[in-house]
Image (cartoon, helix red, strand yellow):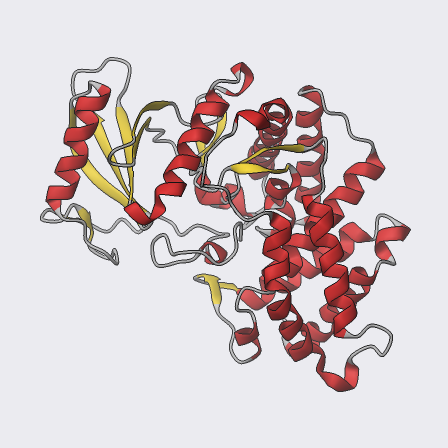
Length: 396
């Protein structure tokens, strides 16, 4: 659930995409060049214009366009004619209201590609066309199976892919730390993680109040004290840090592809300068991975940071990870979660949101238990109470 409630990409908000839907194999409508089950048809004239602009700006000849996504941007895959080096490209044209998203993704692709160690970590940007808000990148056709990125099954293949993803993310964060001043996007600055948490506190407290009810609310820990603790966490996650770096901002299975040299991170629309652990929540509080997988990804991530020159001691790593998990978990509880008390809903088909929330709580308790300080913290006590209460209200 990477970036909180935000505009839908294909009828599903980001909080509904922690597990990607498989390609349904639906047919294309030749008049609109869009999947027949898509919410918003794309007129052929728009696709033709995208190809024309891309051919002119990138000096390519294109054919066989297919609309693969429609939301903040229209995304088209097209094959090339007569190119011996590029088989296919992705055209991503942002709609005018999302100009800032275009700026962030363009800046992220350009900046990360300028770091020699990270050139293969994001798609190669062929051209950015500012007038039409369109990015043209080399297409990576090989997509990592969703099950290998979501913890939906347990296998050596999944573990190897996830460890590689975490290790490359650590390398990216470590190498990009020294380049934060180069990430300049003008008016496209995003709300800080701390401000996101602060804005959601009323909804989070409403969720807790609905779960606890007055008769079971701890006398020594009223809701206003929870609000004060969340305000403290908001300050912590926004505080200056040696791990302040360029982050991807939207870690999700659908945003990781298989490149020739390893996982490649795509969709940098929410790229920005934050604490590195904002992205590391991918395996702590976005996808419900098994506990042993989370441990392996933590180790691989730290190895990546270490290889890039950032060596964290155990105490610092644990403290900052718990702080950012606190941010992520309690921010997530502000995302229209009160409706779960009336009716469950699927994160994706077949995956219960109630179950995922409970797994997040169990993961928090497990991480916090590694230190007496974090295990006895006020928010850990809140999680313990909430975990027990939701087990009563939402039994397996």
